[in-house]
Image (tube, rainbow, N blue to C red; front, side, top):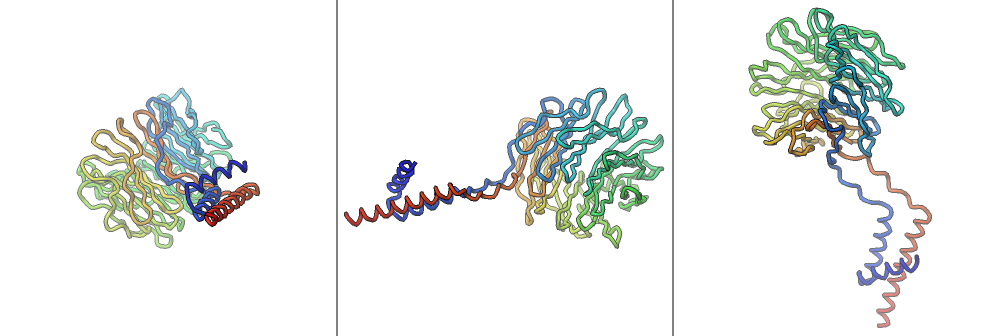
Amino acid sequence: MFHGIRAVLADLVRAAGSAGAVRRLAVALAFSLVALPAMAQTWTATPNVSTAGTSSNPQVKVDATGVATAVWEQAGRIYASRNAGSGWSTPDDLSGGGSTASKPQLAVDSAGDVTAIWIRDVGGQTSVLARRYSAGSWGQFAVLSSGAQATLDASVTVDSNNVVTVAWSRFNGAVYVVQASRYSAGQWGSPVDLSNAGGSAYNTRMVVDRFNTVIFVWTRDSGTEFIVQSGRWNGSVITAPIDISNNFGSGVPAYFPQVAVGSNNRVTVVWVLGLLAANNDVIQARSFLAGFGWLGIADLTAAGPSARSPQVTVDSANIFTAVWTRNNIIQASRSDGLTNWSATPYDLSLGGSAAAVDPQVTVDGANVVTAVWARHNGTNRIIQASRFTGTSWSTPADLSTTGQHADNPQVAVTSAGVATAVWARAGIIQASRFGAPAPPAAPVPTLSEWAMILFGLILASGAAVMIQRRRQVA
């Protein structure tokens, strides 16, 4: 060992040509044993999550440790796969045969347990099913709604006590009524009606506030137009829904609401207002502030080319970010949850005739916003992403490769900033991840490692002295 180190140092002497250079190289070598530079963050390559076939409609969630769970439809069944950082697992068949399963959704709680839901169709009778992943495996599925009548639009969320709420629209023989069920203490509760009879209600979305009250929004048919309503349920008390789009009697519909709630309990809802045929849809937003109620409605887009497909998220500073597609461009606006939105929307995607559609948005613990969407590049639709880090949006990054259409993007992110995007491409679910778990802290050298470091420094110093003496003799 001594001879090997001495030979290396001799080589360093010949290469460096001076005692000072030897000392500097030895010190650099010693410190390189202690710490290595971290790799730059970027979007990873796009591995296949599903097998080849007819996969579509993926969803993804991540837990606090960064483990990602994806679900999707494939050949009339629901499949799931998980990625703990070393690759996607072999897909699990959640729904099994004997029925047609579609429209999966996911929620993950603080313990890392996952709830997957979907719509099951048996001979034209539809119902909502749920299945939970806990302690390393998927449990048995539970039927949440009756199959005697049609069921639509299931969604799921979870509160800070790990109580899961699932909502859907069920036909009662006359209209579609929003219903919900809760999972608590190991069992599912009986469904309760949330929307009023007399008009069908669809497209339910929900969030949970800091008091674990579930806030619902949906589209309701008033008889003359669609309106956006909001209701609340804390597990025992149901708050009567109220109209928040203020378009009743106008003949102009409001639909496709999305909702987010901040840590200060400020709620923001976004929706589409207008007539699809008239090509003049606008995105509107309204916020709820405790003690003041629902504030005024804000127009996020101007009249003209239609704006559609809104989504909204909120960061830890209670700043809301809404995204949508308008005139073939993905746009975004930000707000403090009052009526103060960006004066001019941000353009996230490139302009031109190539349409950008289906935006999704999320935010991490450092308040970095990530948006994904599908955009036609002139040949195929590809998945793109942009990140807002506090001052500006990044140049879009291509996540999928060209050659085949890619659609249905979804994205989720951990508080540490590890984002996972999934999409469907040519009948296969693919994924990409941005960032990686923070590299472990540089380890403290052991006693033997310190001995080697010091030994190397002593040898380097000895070599320097030898060089100096030889030069004096010469």
